[in-house]
Amino acid sequence: MEKVDGRLARGDQTRRAVLRRAVDIASVDGLEGLSIGRLATELGISKSGLFAHFGSKEELQLATVRAARRIYADNVVVPAYEIAPGLGRVWALSKHWLDYSRSRVFPGGCFFQKVSHEFSARDGAVHEYLAEVHREWMDLIETAITEAVDRGELAADPAQLAFDLNAYYEAANLASILHNDETGYDRARRSVQDRLAAAVVPGTPVPW
Amino acid sequence: MEKVDGRLARGDQTRRAVLRRAVDIASVDGLEGLSIGRLATELGISKSGLFAHFGSKEELQLATVRAARRIYADNVVVPAYEIAPGLGRVWALSKHWLDYSRSRVFPGGCFFQKVSHEFSARDGAVHEYLAEVHREWMDLIETAITEAVDRGELAADPAQLAFDLNAYYEAANLASILHNDETGYDRARRSVQDRLAAAVVPGTPVPW
DNA sequence: AAACTATACGAACGGTCGTATTATTAGTTC
DNA sequence: GAACTAATAATACGACCGTTCGTATAGTTT
Image 1: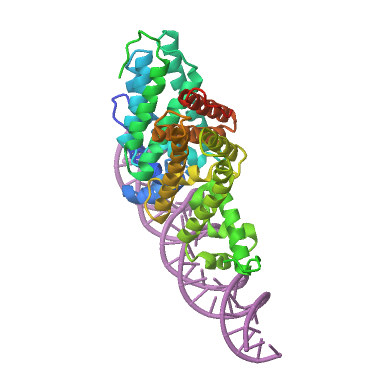
Image 2: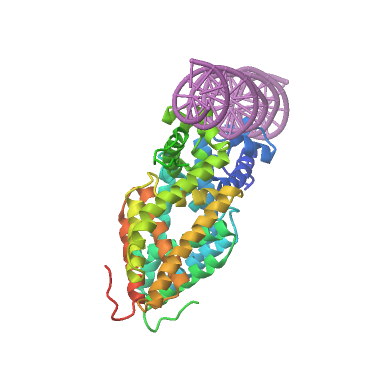
């Protein structure tokens, strides 16, 4: 895809521009609301030219999810992984997730919440990929918690605590978009902190 | 709507049949995936005849949400309100919500999760009604918790605890549909129980 | 310069969408 | 049974859907 000198081939520039717009549209109107004609019109290119890059609607949807996953990783996972393993990283994950949602990295809130619900009860490649991303994400939280447990900083069931934390993220995200109101983030932050505080092994320095 | 003798006018029978099917479709494919032509075909009636009952797509969507709200109330709220106010009712709410999701009262899982996300970032009457239903539901949980606090059975911040409980419900619902796996319900149940147990005033009999 | 590939274009396809208008049927009332 | 009303159907409309096609242009390779 990428040339040796770092420049992008003409086609890849287009593809990149398409996907950047596609993730924004899909975060608001879903992957079905993302129509090829609309996307082409908004970008000022031809529908057929755009279509040729993907070959099918489903391929466009999959490429859009992959692009969103990259953005998600850059905004949530990467910054949290700059913190050393342990309680600090668990806290950083929570903080960056809530910031990612609150700052509307995607205009419709968390891209994955939106489209995971959209495809939750269908079948097909998009559903399967979204299920995989969800599992990957839950595993990532659980791993971060396990690291803290292994270091003697937390005493908790990692899978159960991961379930709780993720539930707070999602509830805050939905409440904030549905009511255009940020109080959900404060509640989520407090619940995260309460759960972690209750699990902290005495003597462990606390990151908040 | 209803005749004095309890029978339904011909038109209301149709309307009822349409909405019963509509909520099922929408819980799987959303309120936009719910198309008038498809609905008519599945019911074996004419598109124009069906359309005449509602006058617009948006009216059909609103009527569908109202119908779903009734079903939701019958399956979650009413049974919980048969339990006396207090901790028992809070626990009953959680139990009936998880049963409602698990038993697929709507084939796509919780109708409101689905369509609330679908319309979360749009505007219009459907969004506003869904936001109102969400607030109504959160208030209902909070009220049930407040009743338990007032009776000296729980010591907790009602709004915060309501946020937590609802977050567990929603997370379990999504996980179960996305992965076709019921373990999320067990996690939710355990987290609900842990939160309530931690807030129970000593000496209070416990409903689980 | 010639040959080839990558990229984009406009036009058109069959289908489905929501909606409007007009007709037909079934039920009720006199 | 005629008149009237409510409910359903038939038909059609323009807009948009995803997709395919043939073609034109730009870039690269030989």
